Length: 154
Image (cartoon, rainbow, N blue to C red):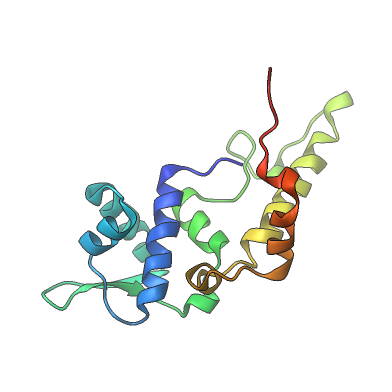
């Protein structure tokens, strides 16, 4: 799975908003806190606002804040708001892609991969990220040393 810079920035900015609670935070404050290019962040915040994940207010007391409690916003919600479905094959949902002959099992692999992504990204909420306390099943996955290693392609 590859996460775009837009998704990375959206997740980081959303974590900052989760910590802020109902206090509005400006785009400049978010950009500085997470070292995100401000103009890039403005577009991302617009996408999050249009998706209903954050709210905004203009003016001297303005800024951004979460539209729902951090306990109700999953990482999957944010990823979908920025980049669309969690897994696509040539721009299609895996259930709409078919293969012939020896490649026919690939569809099941893509569906299993999507289910695996969902099992993590839909259970990790912004509140977990903001508190630094991941759900037990996710934390356990990180305890395996091989999870921290990249396969070598030599």
